[in-house]
Length: 85
Image (cartoon, rainbow, N blue to C red; front, side):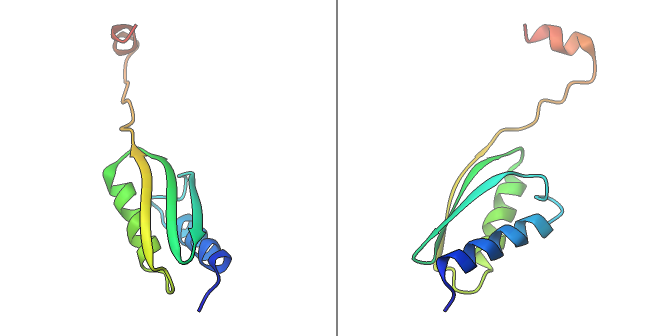
């Protein structure tokens, strides 16, 4: 059985190794084998990937996500910016 700190380190390393999440900043807390992930991502697929990674770690009993999805603003022209102000 892994300690909470061992699980936390493994989850963080797995997130860093996942191309879709490697630039994502998520806080990871583990208590009694329950992983809680907090932060923001710009797509629901990234949120699901974070869950999938944590759930796949041995000794994880459950995964709680406190991750907010904030889609990135895609601005290509200066005129697009003016519309928001």
